[in-house]
Image: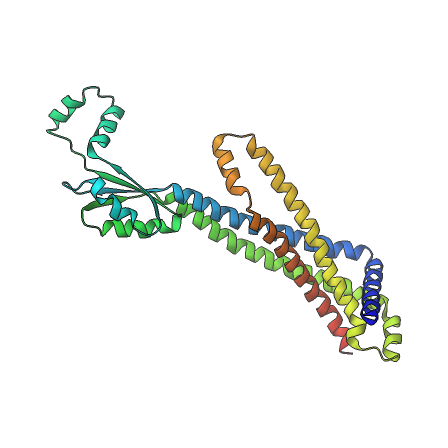
Length: 300
């Protein structure tokens, strides 16, 4: 136990010493990782939020199934409700639909209008609400195949546009994050190399007394990980501030903006997953950069 504490204390002191000697290059490395992780966090949040908005919009989409003449909505309601991913089925009789249509047209004499058309020209309708947007096309297909259903209609343009936006955002974010990852790795590699060069005499002495390569260069590797963790903490603080600001602004706007604000809020699971992802990516980038830096020296 004492030996473990001694080694840990040595690694911690050497890591802190290397960070102090890094000077302004430390800030260059941390700021580069911060920008990378900030954009990564925005991308991740945007993906989650767009998916949530997709589900919110999708759950409010109603698939309208118009029945053939002679079929009643109340009779078909149980069969439609049994379709997977259907959360609600509202039957609308042709009498109810005709009354609403005549009222919208501004006709006060419903009986007179019905007589002129020689009866009610409408048919019964079933309004079916889906669990999420992805289930809407499948539900529409199953409704169309049911006996007694004449026509199925649903509006999915808004959901389709959001899905396309989500896909485009993922590809664009992946490209930007890849470029920034290479940039951050290069900056960390340069920083660690300069620190190693500044301590090359100490390293030579350690090699002469028999220290192993792992023991010599492990503090430098830990410095790269420290850059990544520091950048993740700063990025998380910035993301939290931006999120809080947007929520405060949205809460003061119209009802639709408030509806969008609900979609922008993160769940408790996502609030835990986001900082974990930032720290994980930051640490990985830091380790990659430091390993590339010490590899050149360790192979000499």
